[in-house]
Image (cartoon, rainbow, N blue to C red; front, side, top):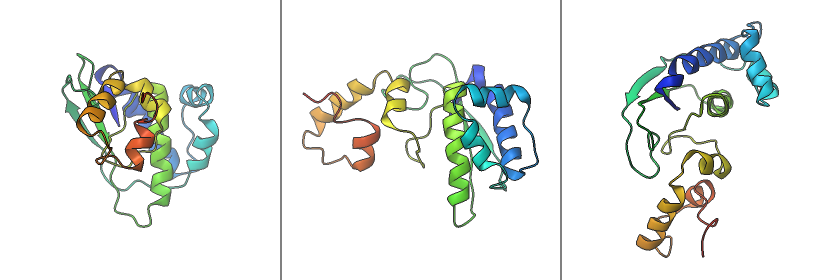
Length: 167
């Protein structure tokens, strides 16, 4: 997940609380965070991950400078971004993915986080359209350089919305 510098401390605190709750059904997150989950329609999915998965690997934070590309995770700002990376070697990964999906959606809703394109990506086109103001321009460039869609796949068609603004 990529969050702006202005949100990185709050997002880190939120991640800590989510990981603690995912580790133990008995752990209670602070009332304020619980209220934010409720206000954003996240409470049921939060309850579903409680006690589900113990995250066993370091959580990495990395500073990313802003850029002017069309759809990168740090696109469109003058503010630095920070990536928050979650890694697991546990197999099967179903419980990890359930926790990771909650992390992705809650970090998006609470802090405007963007999820890495090249990794596991649980968000849909509706979210992507809101997060990337140059997405339509990107699709236009793709159509110009790849008019038959040879370099598209089901993921890019669905998540990037290639059918949305096609003329």
